Amino acid sequence: MANVWSGLIEEYRNRLPLEPGDPVVTLFEGNTPLVRASRLEERVALASEAVGVDASGTRIYVKFEGANPTGSFKDRGMTMAMTKVKAAGTQMVACASTGNTSASAAAYAVAAGVECAVVLPAGKIALGKLAQAVMHGARLVAVDGNFDDCLRITRELTEKYPVALVNSINPYRLQGQKTAAFEICDALGDAPDIHVLPVGNAGNISAYWMGYNEYFGHKVASSIEDSAMRLKPQSTKVPRMWGIQAEGAAPFVAGKPVENPETVATAIRIGNPASWDYAVAARDDSQGLITAVSDAAIMEAQAILAAEVGVFCEPASAASVAGLLALAAEGKVPAGAKIVCTLTGNGLKDTATAMENRGNIAPQVIAPELSAAVTALGL
Ligand SMILES: *Cc1c(COP(=O)(O)O)cnc(C)c1O
Image 1: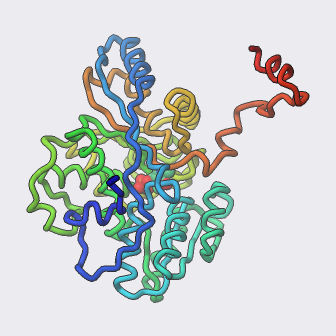
Image 2: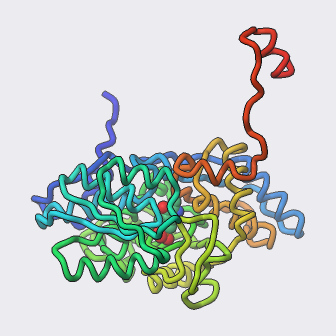
Image 3: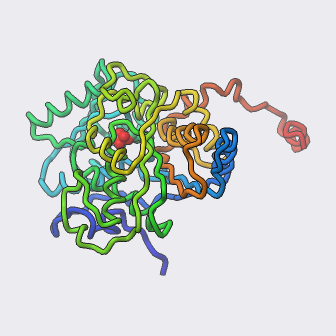
């Protein structure tokens, strides 16, 4: 009989803080593709060679989180958060969102049978993500401000009303998200040497660091339970965490919050990250780094991933690969390293941005004849 994936809560139940009666809310998230990217290996080797560094023999994989039910890694956190909301009997959830959190919250609220309120920065949400929140029946409010304003309002709202907060400051979100690190170790047989991912509100880098440490048998500050620590270690090491921000929204690079964050990568357009301390610990304790890349480099990486790897991710996701290529050009990638880049979300959510710099993309119109098609294709 075929192995059927039953959602990440059932798959990793012994490593998650669940009570026996908790009603699992799932859309069968997780189990996303880990794709070897040999063309990226070539690019990294060449960029390194250009600065006199040997980066031969690397193995580079992309973890495509855009294959989750609502098209981003947010579903990993939402299955846990919504399970706990349901267990508590709360009737409504709320989130601030740059788009993907609201898409995920809205869908999982449907699965849980609760109401969902979404607080968005006006005019800054990709249409695909907005469509998801609308189609899943969320109540939307657009704020004349940025994500950080939205999060502040949502926090106050959920403190004063019987509404559960499902942003990543909800500790169950990170618990669910840490399972991506488990899947990577399970697939590779051990932890990679380097893990590269985009950093916005910094929940995900904190969650991966927690997951890698738990598989290694260590506890980190953001862990909220002990049971998993009694399990046998599943990896022999933890990776260096390389976090990538957009230049116009790089508070970790500045060392302080950024007032007016701006970037084409709207999912990481965040100036005051909620998980600041956990992310700094992930960077420092892993002997890793957090750096920034330009919007142009992000768009180029998105195009490379689509054309050379076969994965269409959104701009924020491509920041990880843009960062890896930039760090290779600085000679930072060691030979023989096993590297995983998280591609956090699906390119189909924001086709407008992807197509912006493509010039005239309308295909040539031909007569309905084979010969015309042959001529047009240059065969
Ligand atoms: C949420 C999100 C991010 C940023 O993750 P954080 O946990 O906020 O750092 C990056 N990319 C995509 C596609 C996202 O949806």
